[in-house]
Image (cartoon, rainbow, N blue to C red; front, side, top):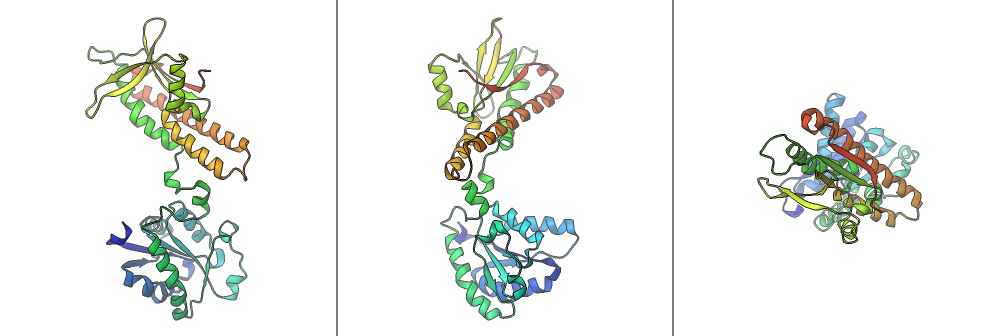
Length: 323
């Protein structure tokens, strides 16, 4: 839990063209608030652009709290704030309390989220104003799954927890295709299970990838799959197959891993229904299915290069339906 962390980190980002200003803000305002609470307080260090960006990204990941000075709408600061928003971690947005800052409109995508005016030239007043805000956030860290921002409010989750077709494919490749394909098409006497081909059935709709839907098809006699297995070091590896007209075994798989993507899209679709038409969500669903299918086909080509015995034996069926 956060309260028991030995290393607690606050990262401050702001316009780096005036680092002495940012460092003074760190040393005279934020450190007096957070260091007594056990926080390390950091700002980006100087260096060449590439190294600074790498350091900033690491600091964003390390941070328990981010303080973003958006005075002047510096593009780098807004970019870094956007990256941090994807984590769903707590943050405070500030603008320097000067006429020039008031004259600069806040970026529209964060304008509706509260920011705080800070007078850098009056550290005592700034400390008095920011202390209750920062301590209230710290008190919530243990009990809050994520903190609201434009990204988490749309996805109802940090980006890292949102399933995507590309991310799901990587797991599917590792935990299904790459385990099974090299072993079932080999020409030797040690095969536990020998198949003539494999079909990856990517459904026409995401809800067709659920165990409930597939179970309904089986019960209705619309698909006739048998169960095969291979021994692994940890547990038996099971899969479905059918027997073709020549008596050969055809491994058949409907990637049920896609069901998590269906749940994610349906959740967002429900919460965002007043902003987007059903057509927009259906387009997203189709795009994700196409991305998954495309990744499968591309990997099959690589697999055939590595294992020639798989050549021509693995077929990706796009838009599959048993109805």
